[in-house]
Length: 422
Image (cartoon, rainbow, N blue to C red; front, top):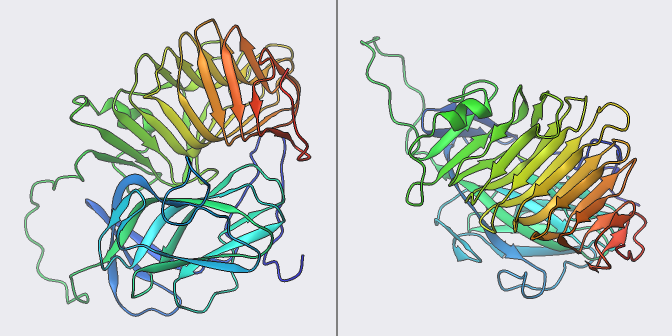
């Protein structure tokens, strides 16, 4: 493809396909401070400091037709087309303040018809030679974390190079100009004061500089979660190795900084009940924007296990993998048991264990719908249902399915050919 700024590469084993920005349109140096994040920009530094404000993710627009569509545009971006969207004010499901000078987003490409790339840049400015997201024709829904400056009139532009593609954009935070001036001379050192408060109901996990370095430690610190007091555990970029299962808590969301950007690995004990992340019962929680891996080996490793969860539990924009089991020992990428009705959207589930399933729903009473996902198993069925009602919608699978009895809508194989569920 001419004028393409990067080449899409695939790794179809246990690692999900990687979609990374090749040349950032804006170089941002982030400085973590108590209660938030400050930054200075950039390749053309104006000397203006900004502060980051994290928010609950909201969808600012989705170009797919109803019922998925959000915002005024519900048609795909065409070849060599630039779509400019307003950011300030109430837009789609978001309400962003006037004056926000940058936004942090999760951008998802859906149903691309040609190999192409996306560039996100301030509206009204010259388009840089850079890519924020890359894909090939027929690729499964592909997300990437993108931070971009907003124009002085509150707009962002989205450029598609070739073919047509739908975009879904979720905002997870924005930047505001800081009120402070330049750095003055250092004053005398006084006695230490009391610790300042953290951002209410937001807990930061980071390899350095956060409140915790372990996801399990962060969850253990939460004791007053409930319907009127939700929490968000934000996990920064990096790899976090846990040595036992992470049990999600009710009314606590777990969010990473992007798939393959934030990776949680468990070298868990090798039993059928050992999962990297588990949820049980009517948990009102969401898992999003990260990669979850079980590399414990032995018998039956599980990436994510859900037991008796309702529709209040959701997993979106997440990669789930399981690997390194003993031969013929079984294992699952995503394992669902009991009476479950979770919301599952934009997943990438991989497994390389002989005779195992990437996604499996066991027992009667399950009502499971998997949407907009990529499901891949190197040595067994991609999806299995043991007496459960499982339906695949707008997804890609690499192999056969069992127990689904034809319940596939707009499902294709890895070559883009129509797929019929067994």
